[in-house]
Length: 294
Image 1 (cartoon, rainbow, N blue to C red):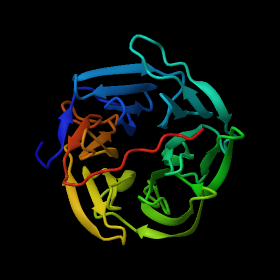
Image 2 (cartoon, rainbow, N blue to C red):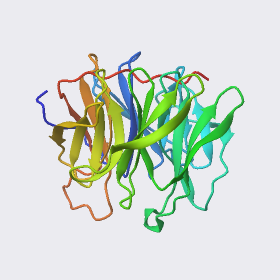
Image 3 (cartoon, one colour):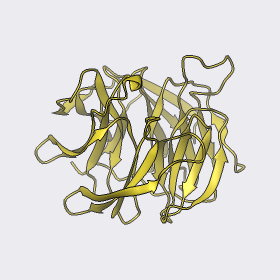
Image 4 (spheres, rainbow, N blue to C red):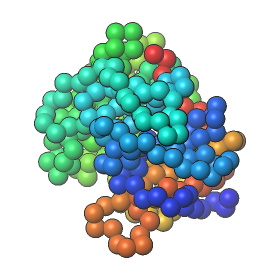
């Protein structure tokens, strides 16, 4: 595959998010938030499959052979996704939102298997800082508040050693990425500081970290994916043939393919590729996602 983004499949998601590569069966799974679906692609067979959900799922994470799903009113679990079998999520921990009309957005497990996910007001136009970052404490099946005063929490990722946490706020009024020191024993971020005050173009959306600690961030509204070194220096930029790129994740047999989801806005032109799934090989290798420990 050349070092440019190529389209995968022919689906167009409303908001393609939370791509996860499962190495055990070599499949790639992601969520289409407004269409309340999960998608799965098997590169070996070329087959695509989808499952309907009862609520919007902002992000997903592996849990054994099944999944965790951060949805509209809490964190759910579901069994392995089987062909021609409905996905039936079961509530693990409900959330008490701080405002009306909220849902979960971006999230993933830390290197120790704790599931973290952020919430947002669905209407971004309200610019309401009602979002929080939560940690699912599996032993008690409860959600602990780690951060608040967020508008659109995004870009959650962890350094290879798990000791640095990254988080962005995608809202245009903020559009920046922070770094935190992360206590791997307690699962608590502290010492927040600016990591990327502003992208060269676009707003920071979903992210991934490679094996060398590089932070890959989608430039929403700019059709770009950027790589930043651990010290915050921009060293690579890739163009994606979709304006609203959403989130990226490494996968493939060698963990050397970067998969990129995107968003299809209501005003997308006919033939525009916004909402499509893309893949590129940037010469970096990723790290396998940590599954939930509980």
